[in-house]
Image (tube, rainbow, N blue to C red; front, side, top):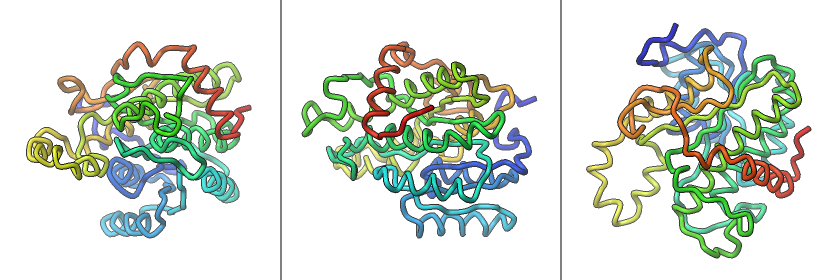
Length: 307
């Protein structure tokens, strides 16, 4: 039975389990890889730079020599890379117990992925949508497997606009609007994915989490702007460390008491920091029409069809 203040000591034994963590070389992903490895899982550290992934693995193995970690290249801005990753993974692994869709970018200037998608929705949602769909058969073949999508408090500012989903040619784009939309998309996808599992009687569970206000490499990108740099001392006093920020996604991944479509976040004031508990997203995250339209648009854009 987990304590009220859930920590990595509450993670059950994961020996024999296989886990994928996207963006596993830094921040929340790095902390998650460490925790999974500590509990005996075979962990696939998936990231764009193999060199950075190997360096992250080296840091973990230094204090945990028994860690079973494999670094694999995965560029979520490139559908070809996502397909290559899925193919290689399935060639070498017969099971996938946890797919932790953790990687993301935050409030960057307007740009495009290699496939021409607006970069924040392309990376944070469409890349993970494609990856999950391409790994669906191995998830199906692993009883009680889980897909965990990492959202953000910023989903509350997100607005879906299916007439201009990708901010074509930068129309209407602001970094915060695009980020909010991508994080709302993470939740809409989670709930539609769970409905897909239930409709098709698949013994897999979709869960979501958010890290609250955490000190990660995403926040450091924001600090490059002069007006954010002025707030830097305040930010670092307010933010919780990445090791705490990772707890909601870890609990969503492994807690035996977790239920489908639950959303985990910190238990502190305004969900900014604290220990992981089940929290409630904004009502817009439950919009079934938006979820369906996003799913259809995602299949069309990525050419990854769930079946």
